[in-house]
Every structure is written in structure tokens, then in C-alpha cells.
Picture 1 (tube, helix red, strand yellow):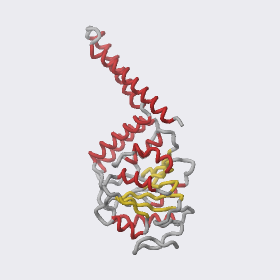
Picture 2 (tube, helix red, strand yellow):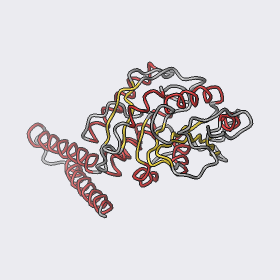
Picture 3 (cartoon, one colour):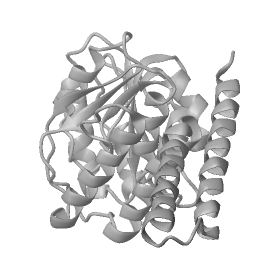
Picture 4 (cartoon, helix red, strand yellow):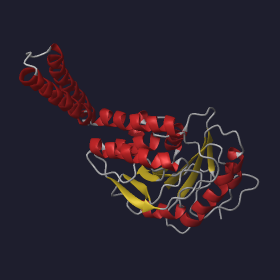
Length: 310
């Protein structure tokens, strides 16, 4: 058995690389954590029970987002690899730090609050290397503010499906496995807050990477939720529109231009046939606005296409 780091650490599974080792591994299990002292031990122990039976080398990487409890101390005692952020940056900031620090070619990311079942990790990994990203499709919604979260997430997900042009079973799942190399190219677009996982999904989907979903279990979290429905829901919606604008701008500007054009056509008919007043200035402005929005979308799409060139 390999020895763990920390005075109270237990022996690690044979296929888990020690925290002080610099050797590469096949898989990094990334756990972003902020004040998860109570949940960290059962989460790490569950991951080890599952992965000890898998024929892969792996590391468990905990990114402590400047916790005010004993999260960092608990991680050290468990013998996992620990990266501590000096200043709290948010869930997305921790994930970006973890992706950069990971040694594995494949990163499996899940929350450190016990909501996801480690038994589902092998179900995600079995789809590599054919797929670039595999996401957990949660069977239920177990979070706080459920009466607000469920309809809000459903509406935003429908918008994302419309803009992305593809059905998305679970847009903001926190359990996802992905290849590290392509994710490094899109970290610039990942925000620091809760909408980070949505950005990671849409970045892969809108840039031609094969992405799929696998049905997984979802449990009530251990400890207090850090989700704020109004603030985080608004950021979630903005993230969807921004991500599609970054990588598929015509899916945003095209419908907007069409709406303006149809509106100007309807108003022109009203001006000429109903009011008999001739074309109004507002009708002409709407028509010109539709043309300008379309041109802006075409230019944005051209810029995005050039950036995709090798």
C-alpha cells in the first residue's frame, strides 16, 4: 500500500497516486470545496471504495476555495492532493484552478457536498475516449428552493436547447467527465460563479466536441446550500445567452433580426392598410434595425469561424 500524507491519513488504494507524487495519472477526481468539512470524509471514502476496483490510476484533488472551516485540514488528513486558494473566488474559480492543476488526461468533476454518487463515475468513464465530455443526467432535483429551481431551470434549459440546436437533458449538472486538453482551451469563458458548469457544457457542444449524458443518482446535500435563487438564476440565464453568442452568434442575432423584420412588416401593413397614413418613421427604423442586427450577427459569425481555423 502507498502511504498517505498527513498524520491521521489512512492507507490509499493501490491505484490512487499519493498527494506528493508528480507522476501522471489517467484520471483526476476534482472536488471543488468551500466549507465542506462535514461532507468531505464520506465523499472521499466513497470515491475510494468505487475506484479501488477500477483498472485505472487516479488522484483525488481537492481545491479549497478559502474555506473558513476545517476543510483544508480534513483534506490533508485524508491524504488527498490539496490546492488552497488564497482568496474566495466562487465555484467556477475553484474548478478552473483544479483543471489547471490536474495531472489526469481525463477529469471527473463532482461536488464535495455528497449530492452525487461515486458509483456513477465508472459509468461516465466507460465512454472515453470516444466522447470528449460525458455529463450526469440527474434523475431528481434535490436542492433547496426546489419550488423555484425546477421551473426556472426548465425554462432556461429549453432556451439553451433552442439556441444550441440540440436537446440537453441536464444543463447544469455538477457531475461531469471531460478531456483536460480541450477544456483548457475554454477556461477563459468559464465564469467564477455557479453557472460555470453550464459554460463548460455549452463550450464543448457549440465547438463540435462529442458530448453525451448518462443517467445518474442525485441526493440531498450534506450541509447548507450556497445557492441563491435570484442572483444565481439570473447569472445562469445570462451565461446561456453569452455562451451561444460567443460560439454560435447567428443563433442569437438571427432570431432577433427576424423578429424585428416581422414586426416592421406587421407595422407597415398596419400603417398602410388600417390607418392609411403611409409608412411611419418607426417602421423604417425597425426595418433598418433588423438589417443592422443581421449584419452584426454575420460579422460575429465570421470572426468566430476564423478563430476555429487551425
